[in-house]
Image (spheres, one colour):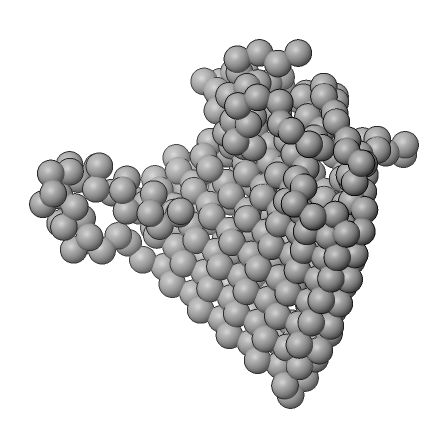
Length: 305
């Protein structure tokens, strides 16, 4: 069922060189093409709309779930996935979507992922987006992630746009209860005339909840990026937003961090910086024998790592 194009997409978005061990669900061109469950992780097809329910039993430790989506045909694909992360579990979920578009028509995937992280659970969620193909049709990816973290739970997110995505709107909404923690690392690259909008809203509802959001991006050529990062503290809590961007050529970047405190013991910080590559970095690398282009690529790779 998987050809060379499919396998390359899976490698790019999920680091898969072969069918993974453990639980997985592979979706290709709107249809499931492979699934496996374990004693602790069940995957069930939704009955009312396209998508799956991923159910992780309480106390599950050291297991992973791969749920990549690949599109090699021109289409509009929509999926709704729900994750039930059982109490005191500790798991890794690898998602992501890759589009291979060789046509003049748009190919688009919209995904809604809803997480319920139960008391004392820890989930690491890795989402990579990637586009390729010589067609003139747009490659569009619009993810929406909704997370609720119960007492003492931890949600750790790596949200990465590698390359080749022409348009994206990325919405993330998180609610944190007592002593819950959120850690977000967002990395994004745009070039040519691509556009990207990222909207992250975090509500710190419980006492001693905490959130850290670090967003790094590179905008090249005539691409445009807009970031809205909104953090709201409703109790004694701690929150930190950091948004750093490298801008090149004729690109445009807008970073709009917002913090709002509704409690006197809420401690919220935001930082934002937009700038070009420092010339001394390029000079140092070029003195080691790299060309200017090689030096630029080295700096950008390190910045987005």
